[in-house]
Image (cartoon, rainbow, N blue to C red; front, top):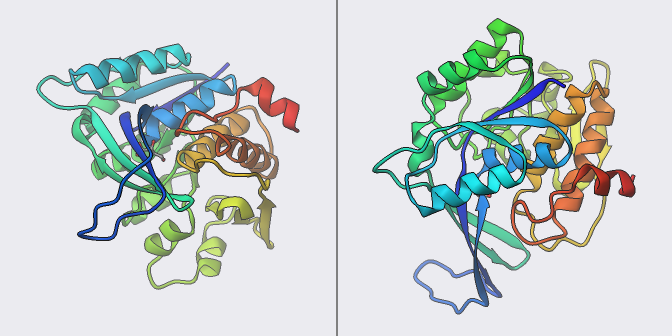
Length: 292
Ligand code: RIB
């Protein structure tokens, strides 16, 4: 089985639930507080591993208790952590999440995720054999995303770039990534001033725009295609995008067509939102097959 390699962030999510989202300058009383593993990179690695893939995580944590907990969680989930070197004298990344009024608001403090440098990743990537797919997101330095896309393009390794959180992406990255998976908000920012229809047409079978429960949209070279989502009662949408990306990597490396891979990823993402926490609802392969 070829490997899926995730290059990205590993954080601890500090999650508060509240009936009301506070306005600027306002204090509200919350209902609960929980600490759960998160970070877009780690979430995508766990999503792929739960679906049966052989996954390496390339990332950094701090030399602190959050870092130890993040590493243990990845190992418990069957993710390979030999390229997760702790950083001394730096804190692990944290995400400060408010779940209120049916949606989340997140502030990410990158901490040790800033140390996922081009050199660190280059060295790790040079020693992993048989890579079927690389998954990357944007909670690590921009130059690392650029370096990974360049390395993979040269080695002809397919890459899924999940451009989250939103930031401008260089033309080099847009050209070198094999698949790009923004949500609608991220797509607007990436293609500033251009219509989504134009952008989809410019990147056929590559730009895959997620539209939440509506599904995923792409251009197949002839027409726009919407791969419909699966309606569910959402408990917590945190990590739905990560589940989608992790599942997409699994389905594509297994040789599914793009349409079928997106349907598989939509199903996994819909299941993920039915439980609390970014990783709490991510389905196992068995659970997903039962829902098909
Ligand atoms: O995509 C969800 C993730 O984004 C959370 O787990 C949190 O860590 C934030 O980075």
